[in-house]
Each structure stands twice: as C-alpha cells, then as structure tokens.
Length: 150
Image 1 (cartoon, helix red, strand yellow):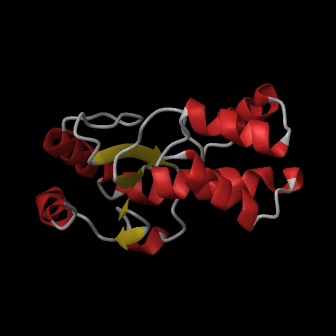
Image 2 (cartoon, rainbow, N blue to C red):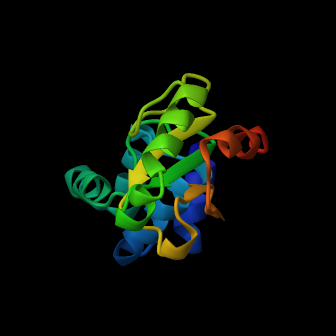
C-alpha cells in the first residue's frame, strides 16, 4: 500500500486523530493487514505516537500486523456447532489448506481462524468465508465451498 493511498484514507476522515480506528480499519480492509510502513505514515500524518497505534492494533482482534490471506475462513467451534461436527469440518479445512487456526498459507490465499459463535447456531456446523455463511457443513462439502474462492 503506497503513501498516496494512505493519505487519501486519512484525508477521507478529515485527518482527525479521533478517527484513528476507522483509518486503520479501512487500511486493513484494503490491504488485509497493517504493514509497519503504513502505521508509521498514519502516525506521522495524524500526529499520534506509533506506540499508541501499535497498542490499538494489537488490542483489537480485527487488526493484523502480519499478512493475511485474500480469503478469511472462520470455523465456528461453539457448543451448537461443536456437537454437530465442527471439529471434523475444521480438520478437513486444515487438510485442504495446509494451515492451522491463526495461520495463513504461503500463497496468501487463505487465513484460518476459529470463533466461538457466528450467531447462527441453528445452521451448525458453520463455516464463514469472507463474511459469507455456509451452514450445515459436512466435511465432504468443504472442498466444494473452498473451490469457489480463487
């Protein structure tokens, strides 16, 4: 992400230090992570200490300081999904992608996370890819779902 694009995002938020989280969210949304160079630019432009920005970026789970895949996979392992076979779905996704929860594949195609609830317990087990919910998942269906995300 170049400095011009970062400056555009900051300008869109009127250069307000109070809108730091919104600026970071927009950078994260476009870039899939927060590179140190981007944080340094935000610090300089908003006149917010880099240590404060890093504190915020590490406090909120929505932010990542390491590269993430183009497609984010979330597997619900909450009670309703767990009893309906979420572990088998998770194992299958791990086998297909070669990554474990908290990891990103080397091609930066997929990042995998487990979550405790996605709020659609009646559809369990649930897998969410890029915010799209796939319910009543079975291990055999996971490959078909993941094929749609190139």
